[in-house]
Amino acid sequence: MPFEIALPDSSLSDCSDLRQRTMKIGLLARAIAVFRIEKVIIYETNHGEKYQRDLILLDKILRYMDTPQYLRRSVFPMSPSLKYAGILPPLRIRSHPLASTIPEVRDGEVRWGIQGRPGLIDIGLDEPIEYEHPIRTRVPIIFRITKSRTRLNLEPTTRDTLDYYFGYEVEKVSNLIDYLANDTHKTSIVFSRSGTPFQRISSEIKSVLESTKNLIGIFGGPHSGVRELVQDRDALKDHIDFWINMIPDQGTETVRLEEAVWTSLGQFNSSFGNVATKSGYYEH
Image (cartoon, rainbow, N blue to C red; front, side):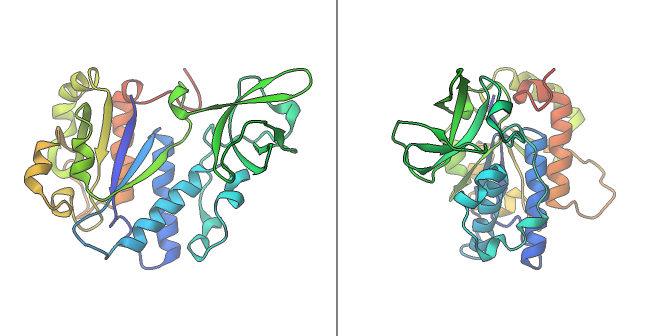
């Protein structure tokens, strides 16, 4: 099933400068990729325009990190917001291949590509690949590659068709409640200090996951939980299936957002990873 997480626009509110913000997004992106999250929702809160710049930055750098290195310059022109992109950790997911020559490409391999000039697609090799069908210039597309004796052939595909993890997409939403209400088959979980300890409720969660089609884990911000961030609290209760505390009896006064994401997704993966997510880098 698709596994999503939702992060608030206030996710970077405890950072003092662009370098700290960039480092924090890097830590979040690594957790998202390590635990095979397929979609990241960035939801606006009741703070109005206060966090708009952070929302834009979070969206941009998360998408930048999901994009394979060989396409980043084409997709993301140089800008002040990427000043510290050099400190971001590599994701090393399967959509970021290291092979760079045509003989190294395997038949059936899947890669991101982009059209630079009409009829030519850059898929990260030492030369562009011919492709005769019209597509939008400078818009990344996923291609499945078939090899013949004389050439590589490209066939467009999507993440949905793949049975293994191929990175994540990012979506910004203005209203979290509306987003949840649009999919009644989605099981929604809030990770919260005020929730029920995970071990007490894990068996119930497992039974629900076995029959659900979609799963979303929702996080609060550095200074406020989900209840404080969402305006319509009554509607929020109607659209949340579980409130879970993944770190009961925490030893520190606060748990940072990046720590909560790593800990929550890690425990969730250990318990339900084979049910909730696609296979990872090393298939078993």
